[in-house]
Image 1: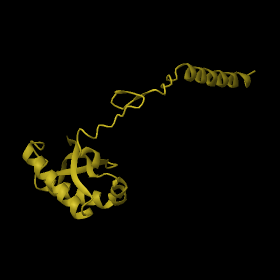
Image 2: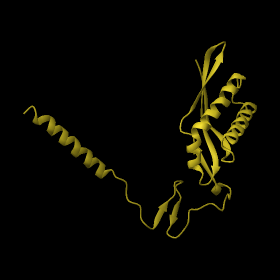
Image 3: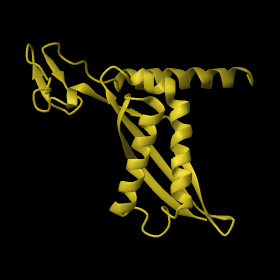
Image 4: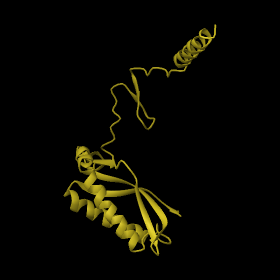
Length: 165
């Protein structure tokens, strides 16, 4: 009896999970109606392509670099803060894989820019003011273009945060 009870509980748990999944599954989408990621509904034969709104948007892709950058901010030879930055690079349509192929080189170059920016005091005080961010963006773009040629057309800072230690 002691061996049957655990097996019975496992069986009941699996059956309950299958039943719940069956009853809570999403309803199928009708073939005549397609919904875009933005929630717009398209009737059959109608196109959700909005490329005529912004011609440049259809020729660009945005590639989010896989990991965040962590930059130490030193004060008198000790770590006073850590800055965490997430970047996305803008490339021509169809060149996304090239970015992933060259990502180690890009990350190394970007880290050097961040270290130089931190050592020059760029992450102290009001580090997100427009002058500091403009200098940082310009340095990141120049470095990306030096490292990859014409692959990267812009560098976007998606997230930036400083944690004082």
